[in-house]
Length: 591
Image (cartoon, rainbow, N blue to C red):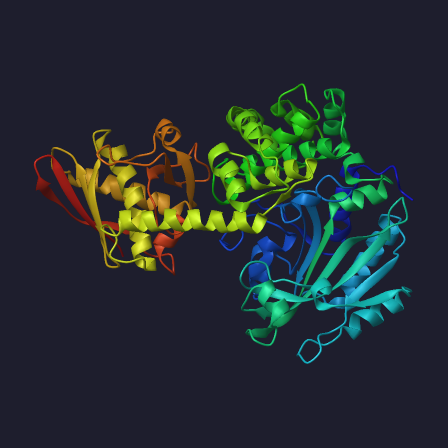
């Protein structure tokens, strides 16, 4: 058993092994998936390779090979309640080798067998294969079973579809049967460490639809067999390094040691949650995510607030941001890009923790007033909306007091709040948008870019005075005391088209009005707003966003959509004219 191998050595062994087998080494993609709005985060190594499973020629063009290998950083929060046990993390690395028509099941299984048994020195306990689905086109995987038998594996278990049929990610995509490899940890438990997916099909539906009604959705055979493998790095580490948990391996050692030294009330599970959530937050911030009340920003906010809560449980005597250096120590020589963002990462963590610290004391006092045997959905939502306690923090607090939270009731209240906000937004903007078609949403988003570009070119005196948007064009009224020159109009067009070409995400955040004003989000000073406002910002994070405006939507998800299906549309000003004294009007199109 090669127990002395470090994480750096294992990463290198993995990449070198597959490079020698003819695979092109591809760097980890961002945690923010490119061109895939159906998922918030990169959750698997194959996500950046999804397009190649339907076009092997594209892989040859981009990589010079039909076979690739990567170590992908990932975020998954579906098992957040399990974090703190021996094997679950929200941030993890996925080791994977991929083939887009380059080889089939035999080589994929033989490569995995060779790496596990010879390179890692591990014994395979058993493997699983797809047992087929009765009364469907999905047959049992006899081929994989025979390949494993030829390699000397005797314990081969046929499993149900939910366990050994992978994909698709998002609302559609490649999918297929899998074979899984299990090895024993130091305590003799069988742990799944490698999943080999054989992408044979393309599913025009979600994984949930595929599992529940496989014969009711469209699924078609892919033009070639695709290989997609994933091996959880942290799980592999704790087996190879003969540790009792992932938190004892060298990718957690420095930060866990620091938490233990600086804790006045040591609690192993709480310490693990702090270490995990801080690490995940660091990588998310480094990839451009900022805390907010929606989407990716909300996930980050939950993680940091949860980390803050458990730091209080262990009575941690240092700021969470002081753990950043110890996390980064564990990734020297790999994921080096996060090192350059260290100062900004610390600032972002400090800012969010400080904000939460102001509310958590009040929130905890309100929570402690509850003395019943359960917490209603309405009470949980009040703790969330009025006192800033995330639902998972409420659940954790309830467990400590042996109370039950009506999570379903909370979700109903949450959806009711969302519907009220959406209705308000629709009422606010129905005079501006003729409808909510895709073209109207494009023009609405283009209006935000136009507004900021006018500010850039004409100065701070520019204020929006009105707008009217149809699927055919946008009309925008603004304060300015003179006719725009040809040069000024050209500059504005160029700026808008530049931002379209930068593929900037369009994101929403719900903020207290005072906070929204501090970040200088554009809004009408003549309009009355509630205590909380919806902000749409165009950019990777709120801080560096090109455009920030009070707005209820609707919008597209990325500025590249303004370039049209074939990417050839340009923003063009058709007309600029006087509307009244000191107010000008622009009509523009995407053409």
